[in-house]
Length: 108
Image 1 (cartoon, one colour):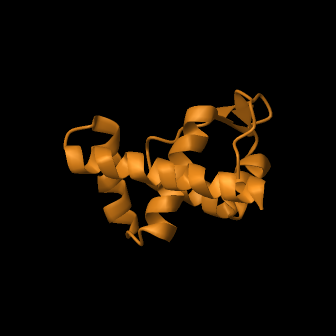
Image 2 (cartoon, one colour; image 1 turned 180 degrees about the horizontal axis):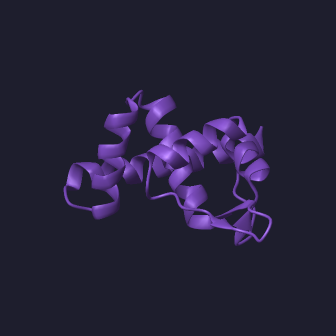
Image 3 (tube, one colour; image 1 turned 45 degrees about the horizontal axis):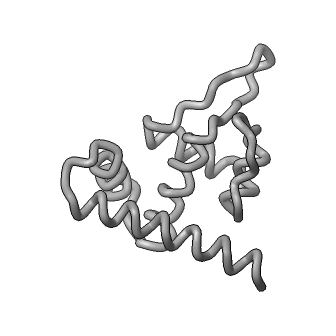
């Protein structure tokens, strides 16, 4: 699914974009410290675009690449740091794969 052109997303929108239930998004938020949504006065989560992109990468690592939570956490840290080329290349490939799936949804 394509990320809408917005700066902030509520958890329902994020779960729809990711294709998972809201409780899964909350669980990933607790496991992956790079995802830190802002909170409204009524304590609702507001995810930034970069949070949604991180969550898409996490979803791909867990569901497509079949990493464990611990493995995905380590790979995501490597991708975010850009320390090793293979992790960086893998991150780019995951992004390309995601975009191709989005194009496939749009086209057909």
